[in-house]
Length: 204
Image (cartoon, rainbow, N blue to C red; front, side):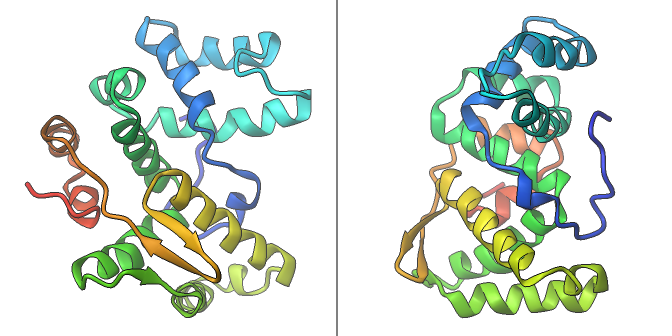
């Protein structure tokens, strides 16, 4: 898998990985048209298909994009490239969660719990408790610098916001329940992503 990493371990890779929705959609459409993912990865680096400013930035951005796209089934990839923006954002978020445990566990352990309990906000204390549990589970994460830990929290919540699941309100985040179409729900079930469907408030 391109840009693969051990998704069973927490890592600090998220400090340099944005949501990259528009860029991901551009590359997804090439894949849907039949271009090989390895060929497209090289072509993007040489032709800058996602129109990033510098070579370094382009390479850093490309890695998470292709890792996430490779998590999608062919039908999910097609849906990601062609569906409404809200459904596409959720598909990309799920792909990101499947490739990064930090995102996955936050959705399942924090966001889903707030949604099911009908709490309107994710407070700063909720985020801190989540990360304390991460540090306890993965000593490597506990030993990161304070700057890295702060950046991880910022990036995680920025991704959640760009996916449409939260809206920042001061130090807290308003929880937003996404609209999951029948088509998206059916696709998630077909791909074996029932866990995410349930976590996002959808039904089987």
